[in-house]
Every structure is written in structure tokens, then in C-alpha cells.
Image 1 (cartoon, helix red, strand yellow):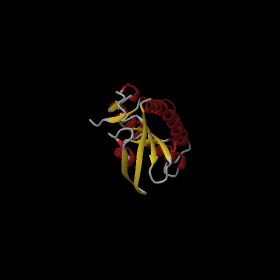
Image 2 (cartoon, rainbow, N blue to C red; image 1 turned 120 degrees about the vertical axis):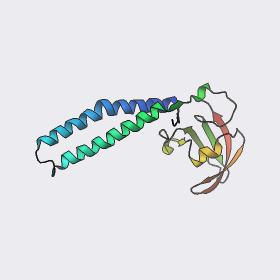
Image 3 (cartoon, rainbow, N blue to C red; image 1 turned 30 degrees about the horizontal axis):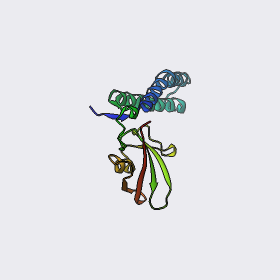
Amino acid sequence: MQRYPMTPEGHKALEDELKQLKTVERPRITTAIAEAREHGDLKENAEYHAAREQQGFCEARIRDIEAKLSGAQIIDPAKLPKEGRVVFGVTVVLENMDDGAKRRYKIVGDDEADFKVGKISVNSPIARGLIGKSEGDEAKIQTPSGLAEFEILEVIYA
């Protein structure tokens, strides 16, 4: 069985999405299919085909979420020993050695990642380059835009 690392917040978000899909979206789509069927000829009924396509996407997402929740490995960084090392779930404050810019990233599971809000996937190049390093260490990381060098200023286990 494949394990999916996730924070408690990520696990809760997936559970909420699953509940929304099962209790709101699935019944809405079923109603839309029934209404489209009432319009007659299904071969040329665009509403029916669109509703069936939505149903397929919804059911696929439900299966995907259920599989991830069944294989979830919930890691709460607040319960980890605070050794100053970069591990899954921590927030890392970095300084780019090239331009001096400071960045703050939280290392999360794939489904939780949102670069715009500073959450990066544990499988991203930056996270892989930081895992296992400690405060004060420097990390050279190959990113899509080239080699970047960072200094780890702080590791936050909150």
C-alpha cells in the first residue's frame, strides 16, 4: 500500500473535500442528469453529456481522495523532536545567497502544496534539497531556473 505523507491540516482538507463531493456535488450532478434525460433524445443532448462528464470527474476525484486517505501517514511537526533539522511538516526560513531575498516555505504533502502561499511539496526539488539539513547549513539546489544556493536561517516546528 502506498503511503501519502500529509499534515493534520492537509488530512482535514481532504476529508472536507470528500464530504463536499459526496453530499453536495454528487447529488447535484445526479439531478442534472435526470433533468437532462427529461429533455428527450440523449444523442444530441449537450446538457446530458456535460453532466455525465462532470459525474465521471467527480467519481474519479472521490476514488482518488479515498485512496489517499486510506494510505495517509499523518505527520504532526509539533509532536516531532525539535532538533533544528528540516523534516516533513516544518516551516523553513531561507536566505537566497545570490540576491539576499528571504523566503519562507512549509514542507507539505503533494495535495497540500500551493507555492503562492509558501507551501511546497515534499517531492519538490527545493524540499528534497533541504530535508535533513539543519539551521545554519547551506544548500545548493538545482531548480528549474538553475542552481540556487540557500542558507537555512530558521526551522519552525509549529
